[in-house]
Length: 264
Length: 260
Image (tube, rainbow over all chains, first blue to last red; front, side, top):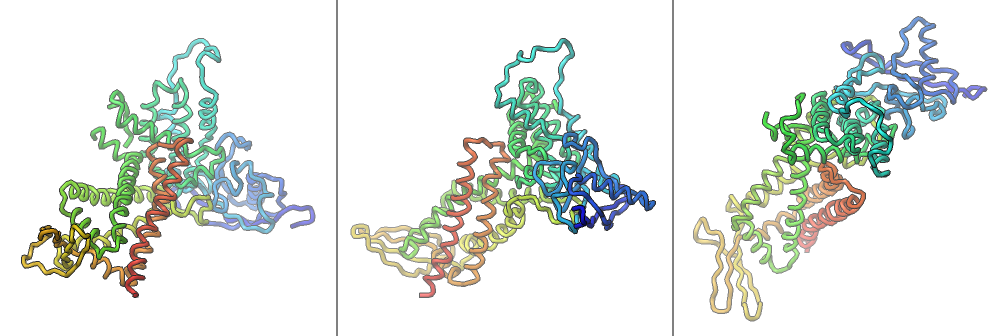
């Protein structure tokens, strides 16, 4: 460690020109890094030196940098969003690493998340799942009174917990099957538990699961890796809830037959 | 595609089949263990042989048996289909081994299942096939005095090729002639290689059910704060401890007895 308490690190970073070309790991030195920097700020410093050296900077996704947008990703030393629980990469500080450590940084790996460049992957599959049914259809009009529809506190809390999913894709990245069931089930649950979500509840679960399958994600084996790595601590219970609604819709609800346009 | 076909071709539909077949097989294990505990009845194999004879000659059991074989095959085929799709979902793997905390058994269900499938082939080939389709299993004649309860046992060689079993009475004495699977079991379990195969398979069974039983309920969507601890308790203690231990005890006890 240098005199000012700053760190020197070795980075092994996945570099890939585009989705068509094969990628490989490149090694970089990250020197004089403050332990108080965020992981993304550390990458900014490395990129600055790469630009000064007339080299291509490392491409990675980021936006709000306060853990709520779901844009940052990175598979750091074998864990999505790095070694700490319940935070995103932008909230991860360099003090979580040791001076002199080698850090391996990989993109999310999933067939449905093709690499765009380096560490940035295309997560538009999530958008398409959301568009398949992750909404409620309401006519516009006057603003209703806040307490017009009574909702028990526990239900509101559960729905809110599911709604905290930021769609970052860490669940897919962590899952050994590349399954998107934690994401999809959270999006289904947040609406399915509330009165406003009831009219489209059974149509929604079928459409979103169908789109999820069409995107080429794997399926859940209840290992719980997603739940452990989720920066928003979305629980496996959401998946069980989705399954129950899906089977109810498919096997017991006659009125739902033929309502869903299946993607494949 | 018809509605139901569509349902069972979806990822969740395939998981539903895995869960239902898995639970049916778990249920079977209870019956199988219960019946096979007769191996410990210490009556020269009388009750065990009678039980084996009953299982193979009572038509409703025959129907359930074939349903059971079909279930094993469906469970294996759907596991294969899902595994292939899951592998395709991640064509490029990670350089660093994932460190997410997930139980070993949950990550190795395919390996454990393959061990079990191999075991079932060996197990059925050795007992079920030889019992039903070959003449390599001998016969025993049990003479039970119904008033005193005394029983004598002798080897018996049937005159007719297709002899299965018979029960006749000579005064107070019941004469039962039945296929002697018990001796076949005792012979097999006197060989160390069998004991090792069985014990390894039962360890695999334990880990397979440790995850599988409670996972099936999750797949079905039956997760409730009130009932989940009960399911986990049954999955752990009954299915991952008592049942595999009970089955493993059979080759071990018979092997020890064979040493005397």
